[in-house]
Length: 303
Image (cartoon, rainbow, N blue to C red; front, side, top):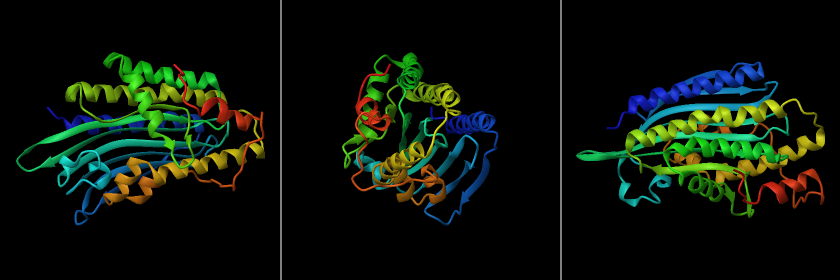
């Protein structure tokens, strides 16, 4: 039985827990922007966007909750599921991106969501999606191993095959095809997931959401006070440019939100506050910047 109210309650609680924990580390509270789409628009619903900008630790951190309904699924949702074209939908989720100030702290993304495709006289078609991935600027092998091990352990109760499958999916998904390089060191990614039935698929999704703080906060705490200079900040801004490229060109969540008439301020909160592009720039061989490309971005087994 589909219990959308239980999903909604979980997601709102998850947003609270994450923003409370990060605000306690940063020392600055998140601002809350509660919004509602007018019922006359093709997308209806509401959400709660929380943003921390200009903090001591977080240069920009956004955690958004949305619960929306629409009359027709957008093309990004039906490209691989043509049988769902023309169905209405109900979608809810929590999505976050943290852009830390210190270049030695990785950027991180996490998302958990539930979508139901509905049609009069037919059973709803539902699925869960989500995951988390880490994008370091200056890699640390221990951090990468910890992040992946936490992801693996979150999935382990639901099947030994899930972590390797979702890791590969993440490696393939968060890849900039036009650059021929990964966005970061990956993590886990899944979509269109209903294989365990509603109750257990929801439980697995909750396990992923609940694991986020354990995966990221130890890394944040260990790196946030490391000394850095202008060189490190410039490289961070350069690599943030790759983040922007991926989100605007490839990200399914961004496309779904914009194509369905979603709220652009909330959808684009994942953008970094500062980013830069340089023409045909190459890192100095043997440098810490070059190590990101040789030792961390190529796909490897971390856990």
